[in-house]
Length: 95
Image (cartoon, rainbow, N blue to C red):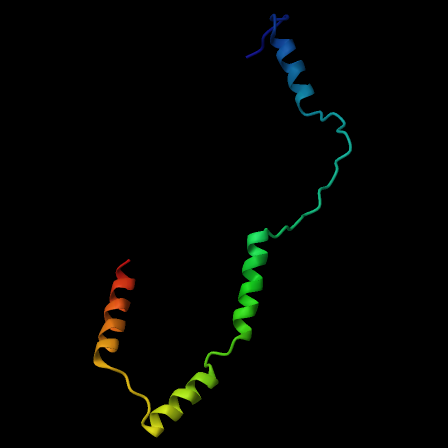
């Protein structure tokens, strides 16, 4: 179908669409650099973890001392001390 003559506002709509595809100049883009910062709490944690790694898993001096007492027969623990320790460990786990 052909439309003869000028229909109001139709030519303006098509004129506006032509301007949509044009991109204006942009100002210079500044690039930002990535920055990593470690909190004081993380630094403290790292220091503690390093110190813990330096501590041996077994304290040989205490093990040797108890071993000597046991072998010589001087290592004596009463039943009430054992019971107290067991109860204390159970209570500590509940809290």
